Length: 491
Image 1 (cartoon, one colour):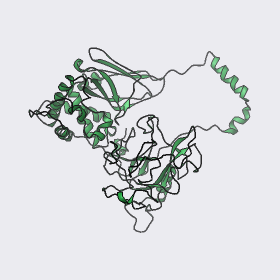
Image 2 (cartoon, one colour; image 1 turned 90 degrees about the vertical axis):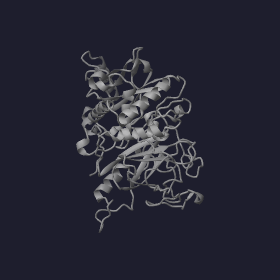
Image 3 (cartoon, helix red, strand yellow; image 1 turned 135 degrees about the horizontal axis):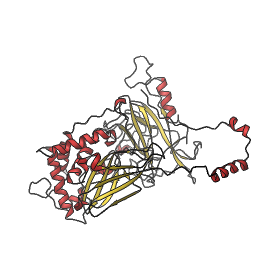
Image 4 (cartoon, one colour; image 1 turned 60 degrees about the horizontal axis):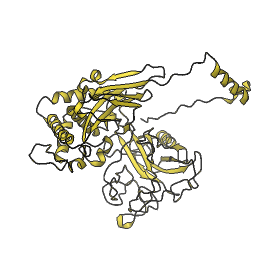
């Protein structure tokens, strides 16, 4: 099965306009007349969705919101009073499942989750008020228990492709199950007690770093509990009469609590969301640990943007071949996938750095595009920097080569994420690869090579270096993209 995203365009036929023979002046007059016509109705502003809830007054502080993918979300407005009652308004054009809220006061971070913030059907839809005490009574007052629930649910979801794989009903069911589990000895109660110990210590250290890290940083940091907090605040969170300087015991307890949750999601077995990210920063280092010149081959001009182009690779097995390979694709599938990716025409398929279309953070210099592709597909691709429709000259990251990617979800999270540096000639560049021999380079790569012998295939999804020591140490975020679920799980 191949899933395609279709973009619908509205085309005005020239033939239909010709009989009108309207000059620019007449058109301007019509617009002016319509604007002055007393019967002309100005469309209303988009409706707002307001979320209302409460935080334990002792924990009430600055409010922040995070999408199911872990990225920060900015409401139109938010407020919290001295009693811990809060409100936040979101545009009706946005919709969220599993929207997280965090109240930070000193080092304490108190969390909750809003199962569903619906998107308005139209600009004429009425405004919506969501009262957490009504839609999920277990989240009526955000506290240590709700914080533990969010951490456990998030940990569980990470093994299922992220919170964005869960429906609102699955979020509600999981929160209710955890609330019941806190009533008896077991992994969930142990974790909640650890959270309470951390929060008590954090409340007594107002100048300390946040006790818990942002959702988007958990993969990089390696724990939901902030090591920087433990380095400056003395806390015995595991009740062994010794101050804990490591997150190890917390991580173990969190994994045990997450394992008790009975949640299942069905990722589409045939296709997967493939996320391409490319960073244009001029401080990026390649796999030789040398700074990359992103514009070595590019002649940048004002107004230039980043584009993706690619196609199914010539080595892709075809299902029409005698004794076809397991990862074969039909000619129809190959043609459709190549067309979707731009079929190696430059500066046609736009990438995004505006927080939309799967992009994580607007304006951070990391450009994103995603496709739904057949699992196992072999792809050749590259990036360009230019104007829409421009040719290859002075726009491609380097000429005569392509990058390689095999669509394999190596960590079974529902995504294939490839995070690249623009003009990096040492990574998954197929011909004349410039990874030095001292670092394992062999000059060329294919779909089976592992140049540096680290156990990671060069042409598959990659880890990234998050602490600037030239050692890849964490998977990149999938941004705001959503995985492809089985048909029965999609809502």
